[in-house]
Image (tube, rainbow, N blue to C red; front, top):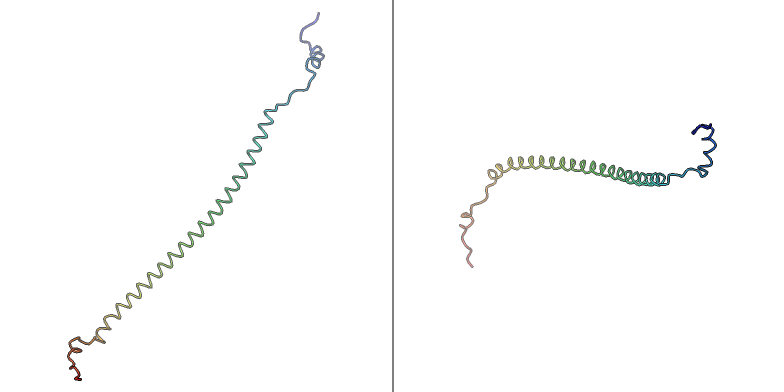
Length: 115
């Protein structure tokens, strides 16, 4: 009397049923390789974008600094213009009082010389 499924029968029948080695999952291996390639490409693109972003950040900092310098120069120029205008206003009332231009009538009143 033999029982079906005894451990001794399974050990003997195993190698006879499946003599070839198990198949490799080629689809899984290919998917992993594609993932590695995609990861490498994305890493290169990301690092390039990071470098470009850092470069643009430095450029923006330089441009903002230059704009601030120009604003400062403009403010100083406006201040100097205001000072010059005040000085000019102070000098203008003194000029007409100190030296009046001669009248046109006085110039025209000279007698003509005879030939």
